[in-house]
Length: 275
Image (cartoon, rainbow, N blue to C red; front, side, top):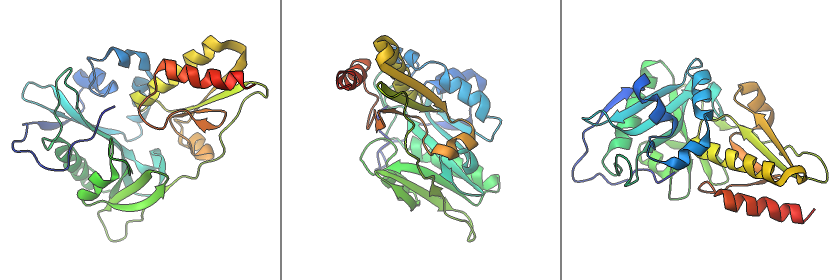
């Protein structure tokens, strides 16, 4: 889905206003501001369905719009009790993204927009009376880098593989968040390739993976057992600890950018031949 904004400030900052998500920009938000991308149509309507549920559970979304009211960046965050982490009286950032492609509205990264979004979210969370804010980040140098958050005053709270859970407490009595323990991945019918999808729908990139894997399983027929486990409800998520990920015979299908339909098919077909 692209890279997060650069660490160093630019020579000139693109003028933007940070606003709460208005109805007129919901469709753009549902595809991570990539309205121009035909690929996004393949992600289905999962994000819209998730949004309809989560906006009643405390989801907050802000956009950075330019002088022509074009969205250039976005941030979304929820009460940590509705997130993939454990904690109390905190909010958690699920995603912060500044448009970084030449297509559409053009590359808006390295212009201070990410920092503006982060500061607006922090101010909002403080005003809501929460004791701090958390975020997940990757140790690798691309999207949602944990180092970017640390440059903005966040500290490590918990780690799992290449994922770090970072946070910024607002009060002395704030309690650090933790990752939820992951249970073994559910498997399907013996004698078939098991494709297990844990889904909430919040991320269009993961929705692409889900839809492509589902179509591949449908095409390959009886040799593949495809199952969807909806973990939008917090209690369902806590039972397994997995969210928005697809597994083939218990192994992650994706470890980076969304794989193409062809690559997913090749992966699953290899498992079918090994039956």
